[in-house]
Image (cartoon, rainbow, N blue to C red; front, side, top):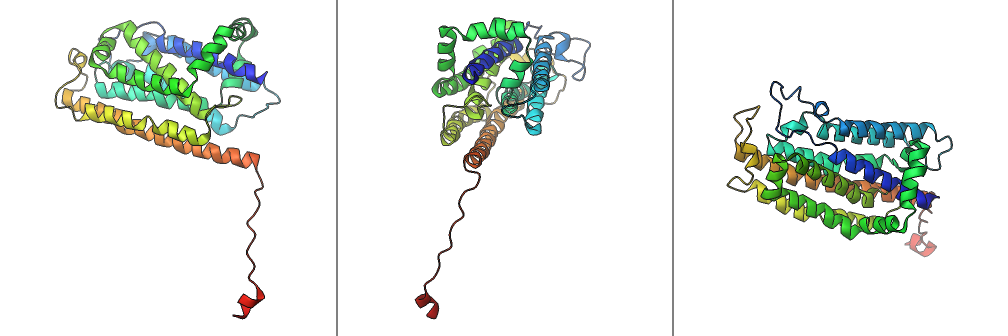
Length: 324
């Protein structure tokens, strides 16, 4: 039963993530006329991400309330982590950060950090798999998701897309692809491409952290030591990409010059350099934080398996040594 729960929950999460990231394309033309950066909330023009975030909250809370004898209790800090992750994704996709990202490359990079790294990590640390499955209506859990994951094709796809080599290549590949000037400028101009950017980044983020966090009852195929190495593998490419953008002497992206800016006095080149630093430093820091979390999980695992380790026996000196 537990083995089935993992692909069932993963399928549910993948469907929700795709809908959350893509949703209904809104008019990506920055802050709408007559609005200010404080009033330009994304859910006014595109409420789909908010609906899926609210549905995720409902499933999670409902599942916790309908889980009288949990096999792996969800602690208060895990619940807080899940709620914080939902809030982070809401801030990235539905707050004024969304329209401001059309005006400023640096804010766009903040948005991507939240979507790719912070939000997925916090949500998975909340161990959402079992609570969300238990919180779903029966027709959805049994009639739709369970039927999907029972197929051989779905199980084959799950094994392939959760392979650590695939997840890290996808995570870095999408990061580099969406930083190429052509696709990046197109995403700023085109509604559907912009939503595709967010959707693919969100999915790659969940797949990447799925290998690291392994929320119960899922167990990662990587040992904890290999997970630290796994996180370390993305530091150098992320650093090189961020540094290349930061130290570029000319403008790389043209799309941000085509819309009026809410705040003047901040040059396009300075904005680009700040965006490169945002990609570089916080991106590397998230890997370090992730490695720290893995080390803590490793310690907890060892304590669960051996809660009373033997104490070292003091070496007794011989009487001959005492006489000397």
